[in-house]
Length: 196
Image (cartoon, rainbow, N blue to C red; front, side):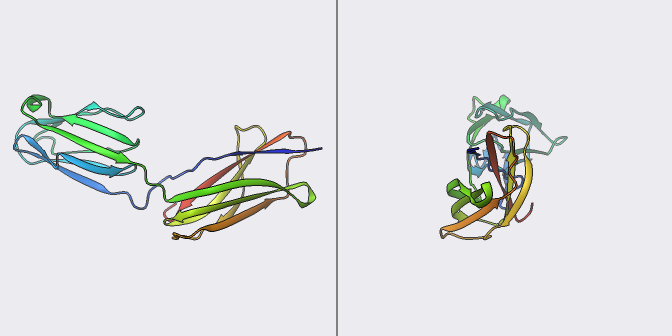
């Protein structure tokens, strides 16, 4: 029986080993810095210095959570984790008309850039998964997940990663235990970094 192999690519980055906390001071009717660049996974921490203010989201990327927090001597810090790439505009509600506004521009930085991926027929009715990476940063290993229905995936193996590389790196994994009655096989490649 001829098998058809499908690939479902999902890159899982549970924790970014390079996540940063950016501090924004709240004082003198301004946010300092008023504009900053961050990456998805970074945390923005507003620190009260003086006055009575808020940090309140105005426009945020779709899928991101809004916020509205008071900043005063009774509430001196507020932290927000960036989960979505895009532009976050925020204000101090009492002082917005006076120009107390801030902007966060968030980008996605991937620890691994996959150049290509393929699934090919292998000996003994198996499947050979082949992929290459253009760059890697703190990568530990790749977990290969398989499903016969595209919904429930089981881990079937793992391949050690290069770790840190800016050179083209090739990988492969052979799956010799395919489910007998499946018309389609789905594979899910999970990238795990050094901190899990």
